[in-house]
Image 1: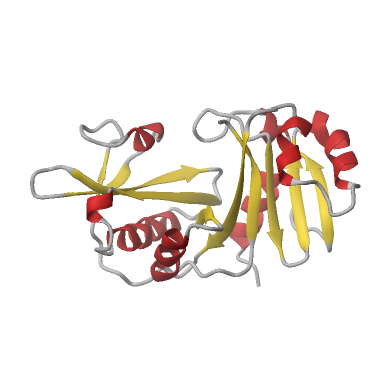
Image 2 (image 1 turned 180 degrees about the horizontal axis):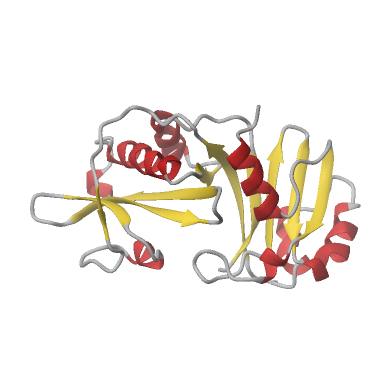
Length: 220
């Protein structure tokens, strides 16, 4: 059975969940409003089994449904123009979640995203981020939490090349996931389908691949 928090997150984030077999194009005002980082996400889709819900702004539903009627469904490369954002990027991700993170030991400390020495991507967050530093205080690895809504919080992790292979990322992801669950939400984890390193981190942290996918359009 699908976790209730994940159900509520997907219903609110996309505008509808679940759906029957096939592709469902739905309108959501969230696609016309800034996301967690202040930037638009004009198209977001989640696929579970034979069902896909594709969420776009209400004024783009007709155009995207017309595109969806083509044989084979809407090509991902055509989505930016269909939602009024030609030239924007697309993503094709594995969509994971966990209600039982791996029992790995904590490794990071929560720190303000404005703290010295953090990479620019962690500064996008408006709440504390989870960070590992070396003995000299230099950043090694970190996790930020994208709080999409009250029920679904997406984890993002990054490690400097010199610190990879030590298991820092998986421990940080598991540690952050426990915090998300304590806050009453379900942690999600998305990564490019070709990113095998992120896939290994996810599995080790307790985020199995259930065959779910996510795609969409985001700023270049």
